[in-house]
Length: 83
Image (cartoon, rainbow, N blue to C red; front, side):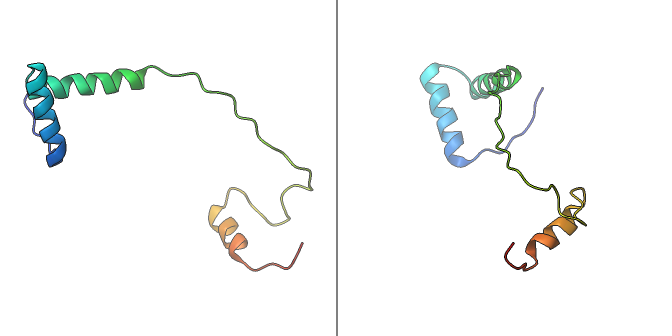
């Protein structure tokens, strides 16, 4: 399949240089790079478990709805006295 892509000038120079040095076509270099990128993405690396730090308290303040991000942001931006 034929397609057109736009590459940064310096990247294009690097692709051409690599193609020349390896005896491959530019298409071959770009295809190899994309295959490598996509194969790495397909292999999921196991993630380390996340440990969350918890603190004691009375929970969410009255009137605070954690599902209403706009109201939560407005509340956090309001000046409040020392707790």
